[in-house]
Amino acid sequence: MVHTLTVCASLGFGIFLSPELLIIGLILASDRTHPRANTLGYFLGSALGIILLLLLGYFLTHQTAAPSHPTGTAWWLRVVFGSLLIGLGIRTGWKQLNQKPPTQKSGHKKEGGLMARLMKLLPVSEAPRPGGPLPSLGVCTALSFLLTVVHLKTIGLAMSAGHQLHATKDQAGIVAGLGGFLALSLFPTLFPLGLAVFQPETAIRARQVTEAVAAKHGGWILALIFLLIGLDFLHGALG
Image 1 (cartoon, one colour):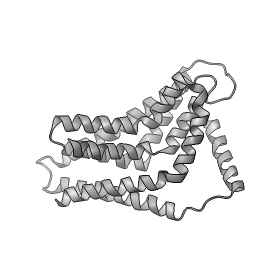
Image 2 (tube, one colour):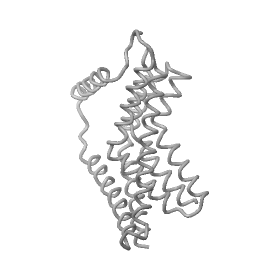
Image 3 (tube, one colour):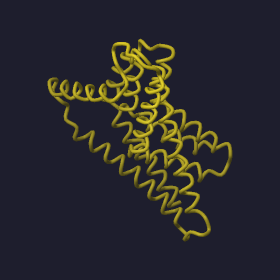
Image 4 (cartoon, one colour):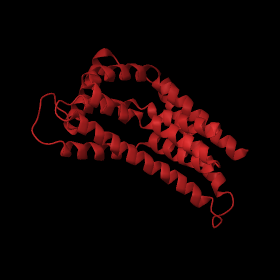
């Protein structure tokens, strides 16, 4: 149980370290009209996408482990998941090594351009706007689901968690691993919802803190998680 909880929680922590997901959620929470509908839809879309990927990894492992499939297919699947995570770790670390700190001028332009695009795409405004919350709820749900199911890091981590849950034999380990993974992987979309409900005025400040921490340490922590979990998967396959 402890091993499953450790692996699944580490995979969930990899999604937890997704500053882009958290920042978008905080932008939605700062809306002046429907912050609760925005962040609720954002959370629901992310939850649906992560659960779908989790089940996909679980049932893909189940199918390849069935007697009708060639012997060793499940072993190769574990090798593929481990290799994918190691590849993501190397890629993330390489990007950190070769990342050049932008000048103050260029960084300001990039941030302003990104923020301008997000403000056009997201149902967010600094002034109250007419209309009910349902359109905002639908747009944010669809956007969050799309961001989840096409994100390479989320796909690899969620499907790897499903694979690990299938490899766990005891029920307590499955429950603990699933709970640890979901608690951490859904935090980037659950936290903005909590702010919108209880402390909507703190969303802007929380976004600034998140950007600063992620820019300084997020990449290296994420690379380390990818490498450690990938090596654990390969070790399990070889063992």
